[in-house]
Picture: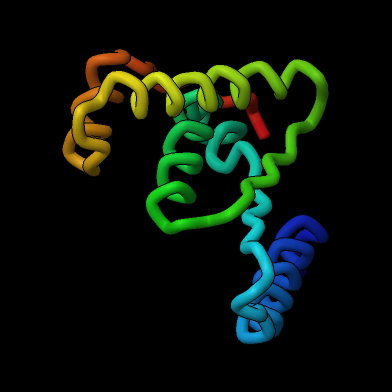
Amino acid sequence: MRSPTWCARWSAAIAAKAVSGVHKPDEPVRLHTGFWGCGAFGGNREFMTLMQLAAAFAAGIDEVVFHVPDAEGEMPVREASAAIEEFLRVSSAATHPALIAWVQRKGYSWGVSDGT
C-alpha cells in the first residue's frame, strides 16, 4: 500500500503535468517550491534555496514562492536571497561557472538528516 505522502506527491506531479500546457504567455510564471532534500537527506537549507533561486533566475522564472514549515524556516530563504543578490553585485559575469565557483568559495556544508 502506498503512503498518503507518496500519493499526495504523485497526485501533485500529475496535476502539474496536466496544467503545464495551459500557461498563457502574458501571465507571470510562478514557481512554488520548498526545502527539497533538507529533511531525511540532511541538505543545507540555505544552499538548497540558493540553488533553486539561481536555477529559477537562469530559467527566467518571474516569481518564486518558497513554502517554509514555520517562521524559523524563513531565515535560510532570506540568507539565500541575500547571497544571490551579493553574487550578482560582485560578479563581473553572472555565468554558471562563475556561480559554481562562488558557491564553492562560500563553503556550504551538508546537514544532518532530521530522521524523516
